[in-house]
Image 1 (cartoon, each protein chain N blue to C red):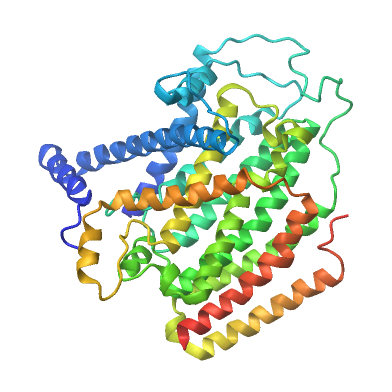
Image 2 (cartoon, chains in turn green, cyan):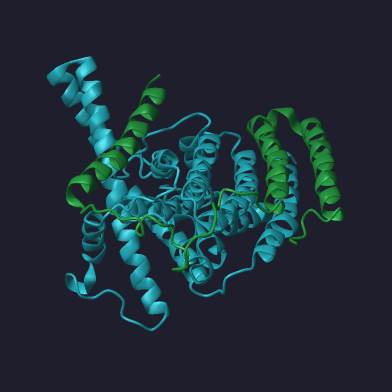
Length: 117
Length: 357
């Protein structure tokens, strides 16, 4: 219970730091507005269109690969803590699991998903 | 270990004093406020010091003098910068998503402070000590990616968009190696609680105890962690010659300051985790069998050990940063997926074999 309460304290501390600084800046900093100032900075050239558009698919591929391997690390953490009790049998199972995942990585590698185009 | 100077006595004394003065509930509340304040002060002071140290060290690497006008040796330079940045205007972008634009700086700072609070600074000085500590650190530190993606997307500018995408790909990829390297330590320690991991290194640090796999994990963690901080040869997301400032191009004033702050503190956090997991945290250097040597080492206070080791790791990071040219994005992703990832996976198996047999 104390730990959760402490986590809340830390969270509120973080919110306080940002919030207080923003409020301070509101009073201390000058404020003015004109249309040109509100333009996004693109090296002085007027912006054309919105930048909320379709983006390169390569990033998406890496995100999917990341998802697979990150879930794997999450699964391995509980095993790591009780590994000494499980012994060689547990290790064999995890090694099998890792080999399957490595095959996945090898497949992605062979298919060219890791090559940046 | 008994004679080691400890700050635990001080905290226990404060606790007892407050309890006698106000009674249970109020004492707890006041302690919470004190903890929050202490965290804020530590966070801000460390950030100021780190920015100054970075500028000074980088200057020496490049045969310059660095900041030397404000105060002796320019030690108040970063304080002056902070005051100045508070006084700067917060520019409002026309077609941005203002809600996400605001929220992004909150999220980046939350991710950074929540990780910061889980570090063991000295004997008995650790705010959050979960039994899933390592897991918590990995989970909450990846909140930064969300903030960065939000910042880049909500600004509605091409530079920030490209910067955020690059940053996302890089941070996500290198998080895997970070996690797998720390997993090797968890295998060695058999626990995820940070305080117990430090406790277990009382006879010998993990980097010496864990044979070769621990050394490999240390190196992979340093590389991956360095990439996690968006700095050095891995600073593509904010490559200033290509993208002006990457994902925080549109931020100004104190909102930019938060990203800057989080970046420097993340460097500290990565170094501190490396020091805690591999170099024994606040634990002094003990060598089994050398009783008198161990006793002498115990006289050095624990926070000196912690900050010394962390400082060493930070210096390594700065050294790398100012020595290597920037990578291309394909080189960056190759390094992670084709070199670091397989090494980490094999190293994990090696480590578990070494622990079991």
